[in-house]
Amino acid sequence: MGFFNRRQAPVDANTATATGTHQEKPGMFSRRQHNATPATHGSPAWNTRPTFGQWIKATALDLITMAAMGAIGLGVYMADPAPSRSFPVNFQDGEIVYPEFAYPMRNEIIPIWAAALMAALIPIAVFLIVQIRVRSFWDVNNATIGLFYSLITAAVFQVFIKWLIGGLRPHFLAVCKPDIPTAGDQHGNGFRQIMYDRSICTGDKKEINDSLESMPSGHTTAGFAGFVFLYLYLNAKLKVFANYHPAMWKLIAIYAPILGACLIGGALTIDEYHNWYDVFAGAVIGTMMAFSSYRMVYASVWDFRFNHIPLLRHSPFVYGAGASSFDGFHDAMFTRKAGWGTHEGSAWGGAPFDAADAPRGTMAQAASGVAGAAHGHH
Image 1 (spheres, one colour):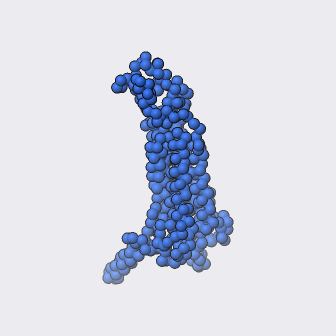
Image 2 (spheres, helix red, strand yellow):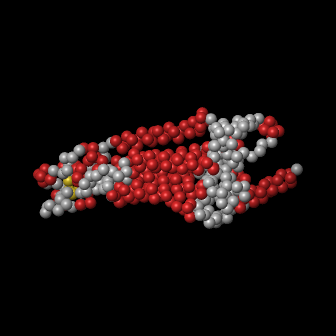
Image 3 (tube, one colour):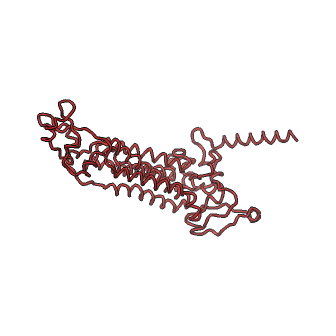
């Protein structure tokens, strides 16, 4: 049995010969079966690993889009701040107007590259560990692609806000090094002429540019985009919020990534690189992108019956058809408690407004009606 191969239902030899389906012996890296019919969630072709060429063909548009968005994000990140923001320095008696922007500049506790790497590599490592039991190429594919949807989209979203809106970092005045006598000669502007712009700054230009782009926090955006996605993935695979009483360690496991994201954001208030509202804005952006991206690649976010099922790009998933429609994915979760990960049908029902039986009954009635009408015409 291959590491990325789902268990296959037995195929009748006569049926296989008649349909022209070529069955290959399962192996560690078995290829997709050759089948003339399109892949669906119930077809063997969906449950095996494609060739590299097939994978590229299926994901080429996403890869091009990711590269383009990455280039756009990098270009915006490197650009000078767009707004010319006014700020006060001292009152006329010499008192600093906003001491919250007068902190000394310190080294970052967690560099941005480290935050980005953790937000990407830790979830991917967990996806691979889960495959010890799930053994699905498409689960790894959808999880990884969805993770990069979240990280890249969130990154571009936040750099545009930094560039066009921005804000002052807590160490802005230390970096700016304002020349107050020169400012006095210019008389400032605003009420009592205490407002100035960056023209009074004498510090390093690159540091000044960076200190004008505080909001939102890129570290926090990356942390929440990656770790909230991982939280949703673990919830689906462990069935924490499902129809049985799980062990406490599962609750700890799914919230450990959220703790990591909070610590990344919180560290930025300790090293005085961000204000609390910068961190909050980054958390909102990252969380929003994580939820949206997860739902794009899996059948549900919260519905425990379906949230572990990877979605196809060209074939719709049929909700409410029960475990029989998830051929090859009935056990695509890590837990084996309460019937999950087995062929037992009890695990698939029981949610509020449960659709597991109603659609089948409705379809059966409709089919009977059609059959009856057809019989009446003969």
